Length: 246
Ligand SMILES: C[S@@+](CC[C@H](N)C(=O)[O-])C[C@H]1O[C@@H](n2cnc3c(N)ncnc32)[C@H](O)[C@@H]1O
Image (tube, rainbow, N blue to C red):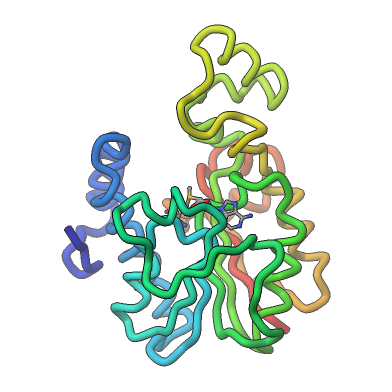
């Protein structure tokens, strides 16, 4: 099933629809991710478009829902992931995929117009080499969209939520004692605590990158919360950092 953003309701009805899809995500992931992809790509077309003709990297592309949506807008996309299992989650991997670590990309300096990186930072032990690579491969004036589920989000612990509120040491330990390891995303194997404050500081520390905006992905109208340390870690749910290459 594919979704175009014009088919999707807006405002609170959209939020309700996404919530319903999110609750069914484990048994039926495709509608949820296709809808998110349609929304994100339409938004990026507005902010950085037209996307048609741009060369983009879909970093941590997984089965390629976002790659498909970008290609639907006429962009040339390099889908990158470091796991064949994830690339093949939806069947055939995305066409033209590159099996590589996001922190060591086989791409030339200043070779792409945009980098899209959705829900990957929490699945890597360190964001620093990835941010450095984003800076390196973007052309001057290029854009990046970095989004991830921050650790103190209600979904920060993924399947072990809400145990993660006990912290990245105690939370996973107690969860595992009680329930065993989650079948996906065990802490320290494919899930790590990635916070908003340190990640904003990391991106801001790169001389070639400029943060144009940070916002909660699903309620961007509440972006004022991003200025409040502590509170933003709890209520953003999923943090978006929009970046420009200087
Ligand atoms: C939760 S999935 C997100 C997929 C897709 N971007 C989305 O938002 O639906 C995280 C993806 O990041 C990939 N990943 C994690 N660490 C990576 C790394 N260091 N380099 C490349 N891909 C990585 C995983 O294999 C997985 O496919």
